[in-house]
Amino acid sequence: MNMKEYIDEAESALLHTYNRYQIVWDRGDGMYMYDIEGKKYLDFVAGIAVFALGYNNKAYNDALKAQIDKVIHTSNYYYNIPAIEAAKKLKSISGMDRVFFTNSGAEAIEGALKAARKYAFLRDGHTDHEIIAMNRSFHGRTMGALSVTGNAHYREAFEPLIGNIRFADFNDFESVKEQVTDKTCAIIFETVQGEGGIYPATEEFLKNVRSLCDEKDILLILDEIQCGMGRTGYMYAWQKYGIKPDIMASAKAIGCGVPVGAFMMTERVAGRSLTSGDHGTTYGGNPLACAAISKVIDLFEELDVLNNVRETGAYMYKRLEELAARHDCITAHRGAGLMQGLECSVPVGEIINRAVERGLLLINAGTSIIRFIPPLIASKQDVDNMVKILDDCF
Image 1: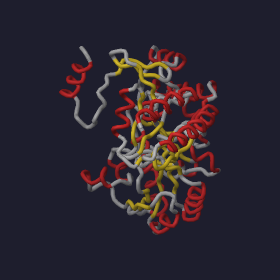
Image 2: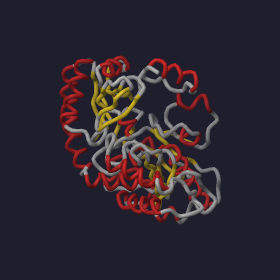
Image 3: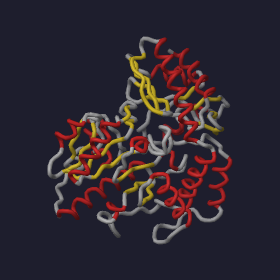
Image 4: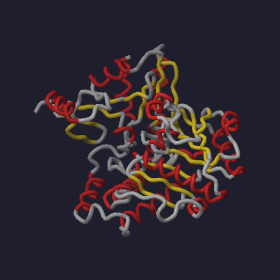
């Protein structure tokens, strides 16, 4: 079948919840994707910040093939070696103490919210605790994750959601303090807001919220699903600031393409929250997914990914600043590492479509922001190639 025939088949079979680009993929290699007609695209999307190692990494592929030949799934009634090894490595790179494997980022958020509420319940026996989330935030599409997503447009058709959620303004500590009551059990936010427009948390905001949580026995939950696993130049974005969350959600690049996520917590929270029977998953922590995590973490070290993110990220920041100076419709530029955004005075959909036509993959964050989240192996030459195409599109 040709491209159009495949797309027509998809539209007759799949639930239409995505407005997809008119592309059918065949394969990927390094920084490039190829459609079924052989057209080559420079990828600055990475499957929405998932393919940190780029496409067709032989060592990664071989690790998954080897695990497939052993066993893919066992359920959590038993132990498996890949899960044990992956948990140990995640603890090492994150500094957290306990790991629960999920199948996605949204599931990681669900588990984190449950852990926070169970912690508060065991502390005082009440079931009316409140959680503070941030405006402009995005945490996922499941009911709990949607409840703490700070965009009414995402929530309104599915209400009532879980109750007792209050919203504050990101990077505005006074706004957070105003929402705190004696029922507050947790504060949740992305260390770098992604869908909301690529807004990094300030050091002052992070440290002030951490101190507030310590003072009032409130749990700090950080969502590092998109900004974690090296994307800002640190394994987890909060590590730059010398603070630590009580609970953290991770996914996307953690498995580099295999659907997997995790939520992690400190020993203090683990010992006073979820216990046997409180939470579960059939597929979470299966040997295949955990073999992927384990190999990804090894390859991050072998390929010196963090240093590449810092160097290439700084270079991309410089080049995007130059681009912004040439085009009046670019009104702001922000981000960290290889997670950056250009805000425009016009809707960016047409610009992104022009880029796709020219063989460059980009995505938006809202209607006015172009988001840059390439594989973490991106080089300065890749950045130059991207900027040249994008300059033409503007």
